[in-house]
Length: 206
Image (cartoon, rainbow, N blue to C red; front, side, top):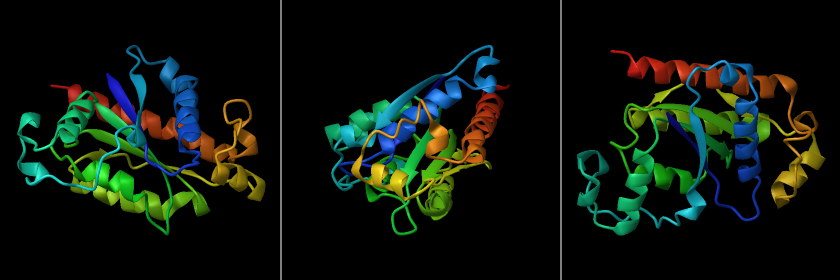
């Protein structure tokens, strides 16, 4: 099993890669992960690496059944990448009560590659980025994905943490996450991952 941890921000500087790495680290060190007989691989997928232009395909994604039928090579390669994964964890900041346009664009390029795959949302920002989380969850449902009921909302502990995040400075999340996020927020990572695993297991059952 392979889980894609999608880095949903392309802003420079940015803290999203640090938070995504922290999510992976927290999951791999959780009791839930350690007790799994078959441990899924968690792999970072940074949409900034793909440099996708604003959607420029002639076909409606839901009507494309074969990746070779896309017009552009960047879409074909993006399709092949997303096809690899059994489930996803989307990590995204809140922008004006929504989520980044680059993430929406990356999602909209495809449909069948996302369809029926379990997904979890990790948002961060004001009040944990709850508006971002709510909007993204609706879009994932529109893609016919299977989003978890649980979600991770990460609020920056104070203004100094927010400043570090804004300018992309090291946040030392792996060493001292409690200085950036509340313990109950961090605990929700394992709870959400556990539900994601259940959804993945359910999909493989006959």
